[in-house]
Length: 146
Image 1 (tube, rainbow, N blue to C red):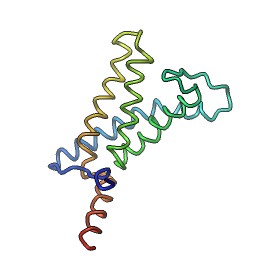
Image 2 (tube, rainbow, N blue to C red):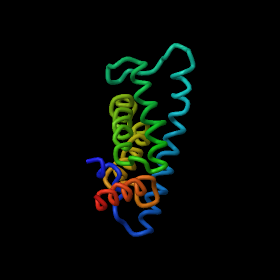
Image 3 (tube, helix red, strand yellow):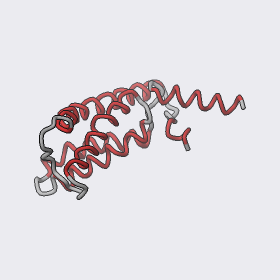
Image 4 (cartoon, rainbow, N blue to C red):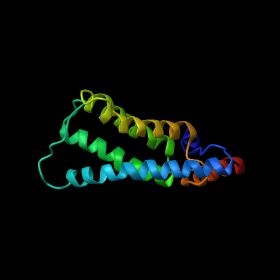
């Protein structure tokens, strides 16, 4: 199970490079959305954040910050890529279909585009140009030595 989380996939070099570009751009652009929310979470100001899933404004903001900041960073460096994509997918689906449900496709389009990026990374893994690849290689070597 642990080895599966770090499996970077086995692709030609051009696909590994394409996955690197997808991870850095998908994670980097999302990180820009999350930084302001991260600052808001620790500003000391009252938290005025939507509560689309009924867990409270503070918890909703904390979950979004976890996904948009921490999971985005993990995605960019390629650490637990498949696992990190899951909170991002959930966050974007909530944004598209709950937070922007009545706003029309114009407001839903961007979170849905991000969702597609994260689904591709969930399925493919990080590629070889990632921390996952190093961890996976080490886990594989340690199993063959024993």
